[in-house]
Length: 110
Image 1 (tube, rainbow, N blue to C red):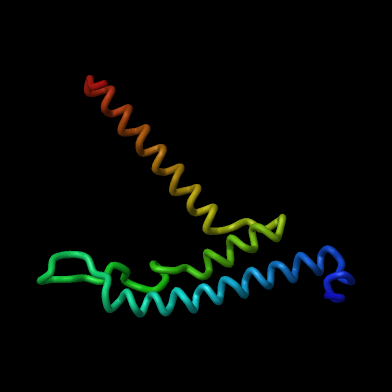
Image 2: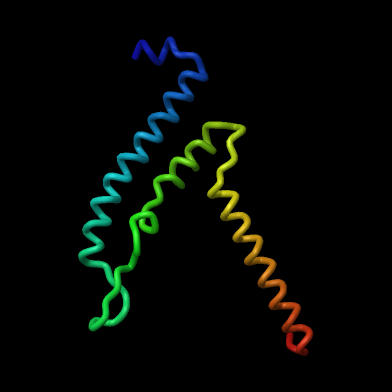
C-alpha cells in the first residue's frame, strides 16, 4: 500500500498499463484452453464433412489486438494499427455501399 502512495502519476499509469497487459496475457491463457476445447467440439458445415469454426488461434483470440487497445488507452501519442485498419475497412465498406447505391439509381431503381 505504501508503494502506491509514493508513486508519481506516470509511475502509477505505467503500473496500471502493466497490470492490464498482464490481465490480457491471463485471458490469453484462458482463451487458449477454450481454443483447445472448441477445436474438439465446435464445427461448421455438414455432419458428414465438418470443418473447424476457427482455422487458427488468432481468429479465436488476438492477443496483439488486445495489447494494442490497452496501449491506445494509456499512451496518448499511440496510434493503434488495428483501430486504423478497422476504420479503413469501414470506410471502404461505406464507399462500396454508396457505389452500389449510385449504380442502382443509374439503372432506374429506387
